[in-house]
Amino acid sequence: VIQKTMHKLDAMMMTNVRTAAINADCILIVIDACRVPEKVDDVIEGGASDVEEKPPTLLVLNKKDLIKPGEISKRIEWYETFGGADHVLPTSAKY
Image (cartoon, rainbow, N blue to C red; front, side, top):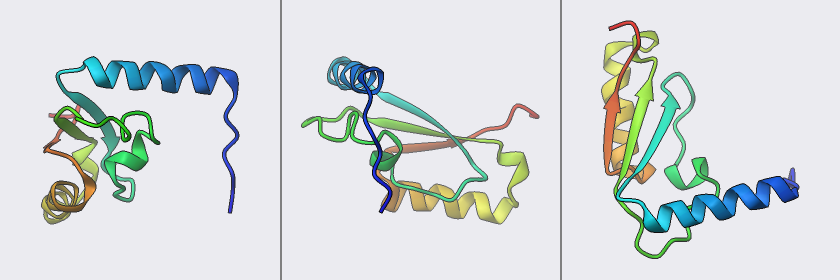
């Protein structure tokens, strides 16, 4: 098991993430669509995952042009079903 070391800057940034999540109307996460799907809570690594009333989460799958069309719908379904995202929006700078 690889243990992540938390430095002072990391701890301060995570405190800011928690504060922002408590006061936020929504959480926007941009993920590379080519990467293996992972849970939203894993992406934010505990920053907002421990907030009691988490605001709605919008997950933006970037670089959808690099994924096969059938695969995009599977990833959207996975993130909505298992990933913890309330809404998933595939996008690409190409179009």
